[in-house]
Amino acid sequence: MDESQNARIALDRLIAERGENYADLSRLIGRNPAYIQQFIKRGTPRKLDEADRHVLARYFGVAEQMLGGSAAPMAIPARTRGMPAVVAVPRLALGASAGVGTLDDDERAAGVMAFDAHWLRHLGVRPQRVSIIRVDGESMAPTLSDGDDIMVDHDDDATRLRDGVYVLRLDGVLMVKRIAMGPLRGRFSVVSDNLHYPDWTDIDPTLVDIVGRVVWTGRRLV
Image (cartoon, rainbow, N blue to C red; front, side, top):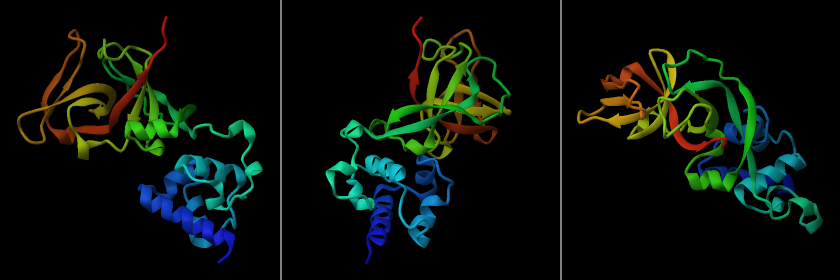
């Protein structure tokens, strides 16, 4: 068994053990969604690009040698030795309204924000399944303010719904609100933290599209 085949087997095993998938890891290294699957299943490319291998090794916390890298210490650049695995989280070109709502459906990435992959895992999210969205409006003040950046976990959707702050669509309007579960199974309320804004109580869940749960926020101090 040659070195490249060992690397494919090792990467496939890491993906299975960590609950990852081929498409998400392909996106992690900036490749098309089928890239990692083709590498593992078809041997195309024959070996990982050095930069891709470096990112994947740091992401999984393993030696690059396991993924086909050189065993020599010089294979790891001195300037990156000991640095955390950093991943780029897309910053979407839309605002989740904390006021009356926005109809902006343009979900193209408008840039990225870099985060430590291990910190994201400690946060309980998969780095490939989060995005950054800007808050528009003041209906969630003081919890969230106009202009805040929020991190949304797209894995944490309607199937795991519980009390918390979510990005959702109600009647086609994108907004960030607090979900408060009701006494009746499956029913919930959409609540504004700012008492000057309206709430929607005892909502039929079929009317709401849960985009994801807000797990982190960052804001500029003025």
